[in-house]
Every structure is written in structure tokens, then in C-alpha cells.
Image (cartoon, rainbow, N blue to C red; front, side, top):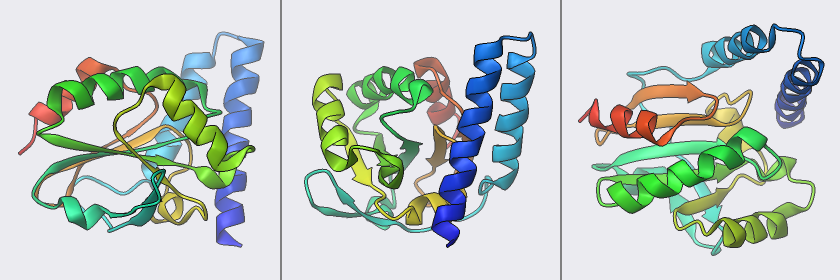
Length: 184
């Protein structure tokens, strides 16, 4: 029941963003900021211990967030149907290529919202030439645990296992790089 409610809230948020983008009534930026602020208010906060996750990767391997304790982690929630998520993927890939020894990128796909399921995610990974790990949140457990209301949402997690920063909305490479350099 909670999973369906979370998915419904996520879908409703995206519809509202879409309607405001289509109507272009001059308040698009204000509306996006309001949605981002609402989502951020519900997200886990900096300083909190990052809840452990155990999700299957696209390669059918069980991955636990706790496996990366002692290393910085960028936990990114996304979906193939999300335009801002797609725009952010090249920046995530660039970060992986340049800082892969310093940070683990875990891209949590909101698989429960994917209309074409895992095959769409696999196809997207191949087409986008993604080398970072993609984890499948088939039952929205991670989305619920991390209180994700809209995507993309990212959590920067320090080597101590604590959340350092939460970001709702797409990020640029420069923002990611500066954020990673600002902690640990």
C-alpha cells in the first residue's frame, strides 16, 4: 500500500511539472523550485547515517550499500522515462571516469515505475554507454527508505557512511565534482 502511494505521489509530482512546463506560464522556475523544496523537505538529511540497501544489479548481483563503507558514494535515484535523469547521465559517467577510484556511483533505477521493465533499463544502459553500477528497485523499497518523492534525487554519502548532502533535481558535472571535494 505504501509502495503504491509513493509511486502515485511520484507520478503526480511529475505530471504537475510537465503541465507547468507545457503551459510555460512564466512560473516554471518557481514551480520547479517549489517541487524541489517539497521533495527535499521529505528527504533524509545531511548528518544522518545512510540507511543500508540491498538491491540486485543489472548483472543479477546482490549489492549492499554497506559494502562501500570507507568510500564516498553517490546514490542517484532515476528512471529511463525521466528527461532530467537522462540529461544527468553523461555527467555521472564523466564523474565515474575521472573519480572512479574515489567515489562509487550507485544509480538506483525506480524499476517499479518502468513501463517496459528491466529490458528497457538494460537497453538504456547499452545505448548510453554507462559503466557505473545500476541497481534495480523493483518494489520501491529503496525509494521508500530514502523518501524519494521525485527524480532525479541524489545522496552524497561520506566514507563514514553518513549523508553529506541531498540534491533533488538534475546535477551538472561541476556541481558533483565540487560537492565531492567538499567532504571527507
